[in-house]
Image (tube, rainbow, N blue to C red; front, side, top):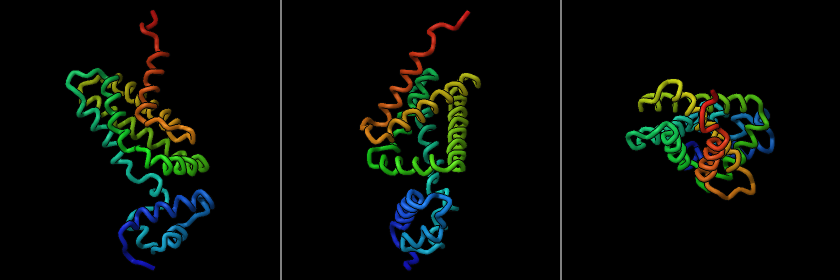
Length: 192
């Protein structure tokens, strides 16, 4: 087996995803993944802490891109515009080339309750990070939390649409549609 080779991480990811889809996540071992990729377990652990990380690695980069959108938005932007900027910034990580991987990744997660729990924690973490970014921009704590929750909900609704087999629109188009739908269902005035 090859000890070190360029592209090893990507080979491991592809091998793992294929095995997770065909054998199941629980039935696939790190040894299986390494062997399928033609690499060693040691090489696997150079890139991933465990087999779950094949599906969840990069979460910090993902959150940082959303936060960058909030941070770089124009001065004086309202909270809803800040979250819109965050979603636009984050959507650059989800291009058409990534869509097939994302579809397969989500199928693996949907088939495993423990992975669904991990995905839920990712959602909570993103909401927390966005809330902090909004507060840093001067948004009130409560308004920041509500706005972050709205933004993260819009992202996840849009993401589910984006990975549908028949969907061709960009993630950002779907996010903007989700935000518009949310705005449409909210009353224009607070109830008396």
